[in-house]
Image 1 (cartoon, rainbow, N blue to C red):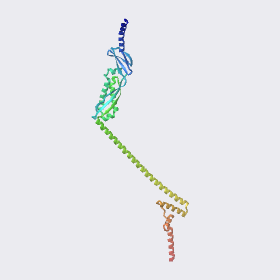
Image 2 (cartoon, rainbow, N blue to C red; image 1 turned 135 degrees about the horizontal axis):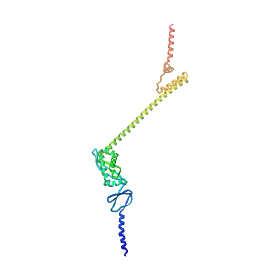
Image 3 (cartoon, helix red, strand yellow; image 1 turned 60 degrees about the vertical axis):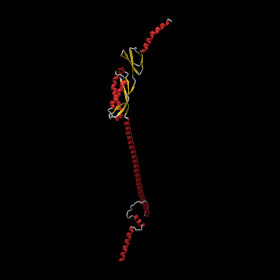
Image 4 (cartoon, rainbow, N blue to C red; image 1 turned 180 degrees about the horizontal axis):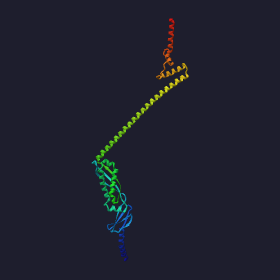
Length: 307
């Protein structure tokens, strides 16, 4: 029974030290850096891992050094053409991991996330206020670039790195949006009509060209056919001159003439040729040479009778 008071005394002495030790244990995660202060003054930077500080005397403030995102929240901005646009943006940033930057994010600015949001909202009003609604929608890259540059210049002394800025939306009023949709629809219909007319014109031009080609082909075929017939007649005449003699030759020419006349072909026959005399005989007309000879005989007979 006398040993119990000694155990209580031992526990009474050791437990405060255990609690005091446990109260000073601090664990810093790899995503954070720690700022240790002693009696209100900065003492050192705590790296990720186990740390022990003096309770009450020391304090640790942990700072997140990973990439973070804040939403600038939608706001109504009057554009240069006096239209109200609902604008929203997001800002991606992180606290630099070196000691001076971690200190700056805590000692040089009060709640840097809230400060970045308000600075982004103000900057957006200044940028979009100088643009028309149409140009603001078409120049998002320029707006993002100007917003990033302004935030970078303003926050570089806070130990903050602005990674990027993204313009989420630039929405006009509902009535303006409806009018814009009608204009876009009308433009699309106009383009479709022009494309349709162009296609029809192209088809008509193709048909026209096909007809022209067809006519040219028909004309060429007729020319070639006529040239072939002429060449055939020429060859027939040459063959007749070479292989046919006397009346046989004349007969062959008549056959060639008959064939040509059946096809309504025009043929020029030299005056005084045997072919003319033969045609004349077929028509019941005496040849020119025989007529002249008969006339001379009759004249001589008449002269003899007179004597």
